[in-house]
Amino acid sequence: MASTELFDPPTPSSIDEDLPSPSTSSSSSTVSNPDNIESDADREWRESLQQLELLLTMVLVPYVGKYFGRKFAYWAWGKWMTWMYPVQIEVTDPALFKSTGAVGAAVAAPAL
Image (tube, rainbow, N blue to C red; front, side, top):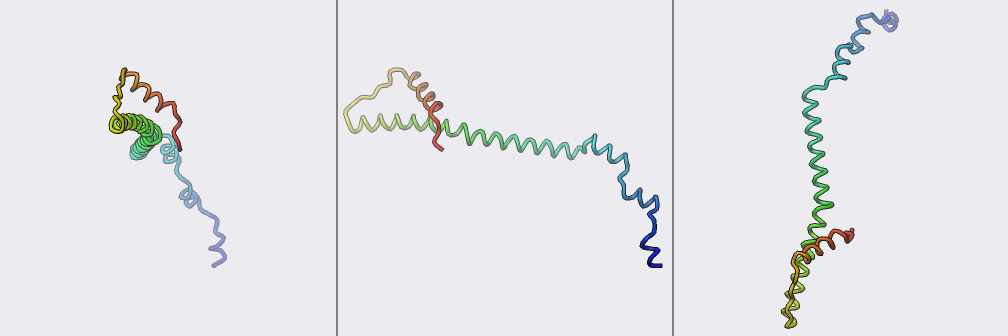
């Protein structure tokens, strides 16, 4: 009897249990679960925040730091010169002075 149990042909009901039903496979491929949609939106939101963080840390912060660093360097240089030597430092056109610093910070390649 053991040999007949090993070689029993499958019954149609056992074949049907192994295969997925057509209604579940078509509905899962065409219509997503609302929980999956929400998780996809959360995943895309996190990816957007990560891209924004990279933009800020890799592009914006170095250029803003370079601009304010130059402003501080010019200010410190002016203070040093007035303290060390009796000279008066005057900026005749403040708008041109600021724009030159901004252009210089944007044009010069950041040192990596």
